[in-house]
Image (cartoon, rainbow, N blue to C red):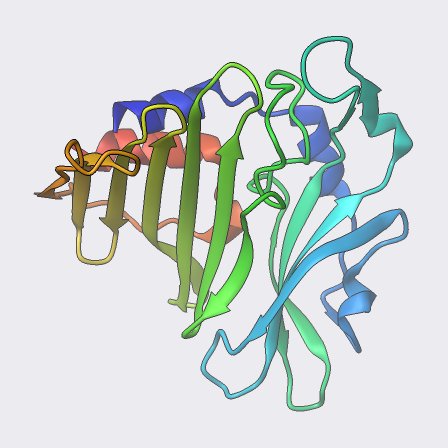
Length: 244
């Protein structure tokens, strides 16, 4: 878990960019999903599925600001230009009238395409990550891969269920691979059952060294966080309190 916490601590949140996403006006209802994309923004991801068990096809989408002022030059390693435009996650419930109601808006949890501090980092959401609806659950996935400064590739999945009239974080999965040695490790946390497992000792490249060992642990009781207010800072603080 130390590597997980260290990663989040090193992530620098761009407060002024998140403020742009927080201040953008999103309607509470609309006749189509396009109704929820403000002027100067674009939709970059969407997924469809029933999230509130009413048999209707709900939508989850990510919109991104297109302000050219948020695209800056980079003289260091990585890409020559960095797109720091903020992104906003929207969850839309479909109605029987074939319209949509805004269920969740989160402008602080979805990272921008590039990072001003980690200029070699690929887009965590669009590289191999994404958003999906599976079996009524909302999953947000990130892949952290850097072209310089690190040999590790890390996948992180966050699973939310609509319950208690909000989307609560019920699961977290973390998988890391060292691209040179092949070493693997993973962590899986079920916040509903208050259990987690950690697997170490795996190796994707060497069968003789591939000796994975999984250890199960209980986690301390803690409230389930809502997607509407979740940030990386909140999640990091949450882990330090509930994970031994």
